[in-house]
Length: 80
Image 1 (cartoon, rainbow, N blue to C red):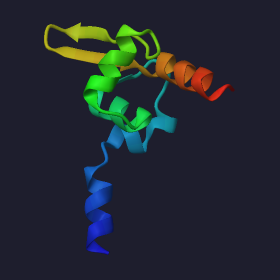
Image 2 (cartoon, helix red, strand yellow):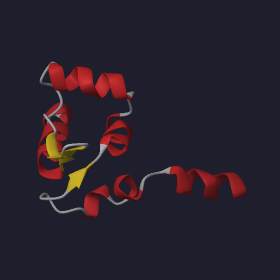
Image 3 (spheres, helix red, strand yellow):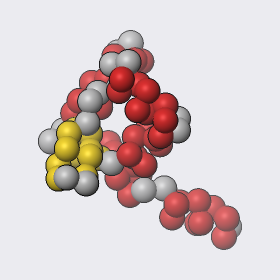
């Protein structure tokens, strides 16, 4: 049981609650990695290849993806 609680704690809150986030919200790289199930390098490769939406620079050191754009990209990937 302890292992399961540790696993739940390691999942970013935004990933666990992704379905409840408004389309205007922003998510960071760890959540993107969880949604796509790939590494950081694969996320950036997908951005370069235009298969993953381009992130926004929120501040000089903060890059994040718009939830609405990510949902649309995931739906298109799934063929919905």
